Length: 101
Image 1 (cartoon, rainbow, N blue to C red):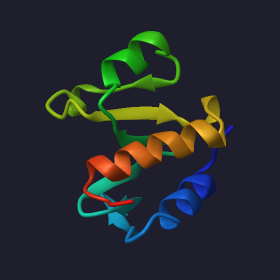
Image 2 (cartoon, rainbow, N blue to C red; image 1 turned 30 degrees about the vertical axis):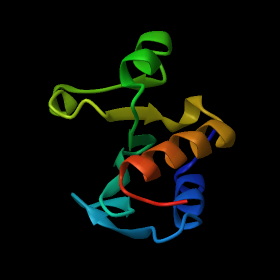
Image 3 (tube, rainbow, N blue to C red; image 1 turned 45 degrees about the vertical axis):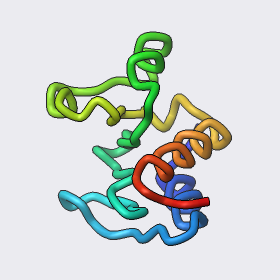
Image 4 (spheres, rainbow, N blue to C red; image 1 turned 90 degrees about the horizontal axis):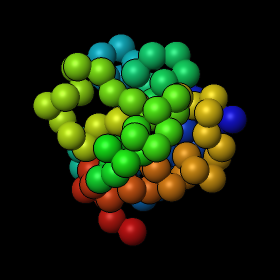
């Protein structure tokens, strides 16, 4: 089970990532937004696999009507993933958001 502290630790370990509020929630930015706490226990990330993730694991990955116009955004229930999976999601989101490895 991953936590908001895991998100913070993993995001801030990536080169150039900064943390600042977005819509009064913790958010992390590479060149653009890469991750944000949507609500307690729910993380927004960018991915190229939104349809596949939500289709395969709908109890873990989903989106709301708010996210319809942004096909790279997916919501993740943190209590349903481990730190390794979280790290992979954040790495992909970082690269999509303009971060460089």
